[in-house]
Image (cartoon, helix red, strand yellow):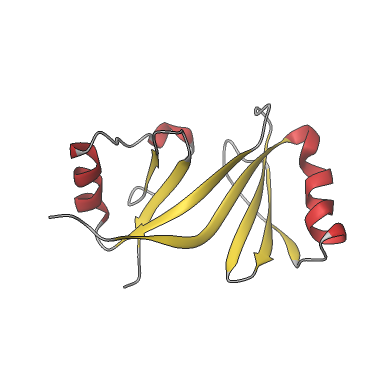
Amino acid sequence: MKPVFQGGINIAIKIPKQKYEATVAFYKETLGLEVTEKPITNPTVSRTHEVKFGPNIIWLDCVDNYTHSETWLELKTTDVPVATEYLASRGTYTCDELEEIPKDMHWITDPAGSVFILSKSGV
């Protein structure tokens, strides 16, 4: 059975430490968007800011060991285990070593290397 997928509201931009403050200032001061620093306990993300971006939320994540920025997206499905099995049958495997997340979610990548967090939708 093919699972149903839909885009989620969360977008994470992984930002190298040396560009983080300027990036936060761009969203807050230059664009005038609502930007709020949020507490985080994560071994790979040292700071994070939430940006209200229309109906979406952009998470500006400070990543100390990155040399360039990456954009990560949220992908929702009604049944994560079924979706994970389906994706594996199509050659897309989880890569949960990317960053620590809850056990009921998985990281995947598309063929171009774009990262998605696969999580359960509320529907």
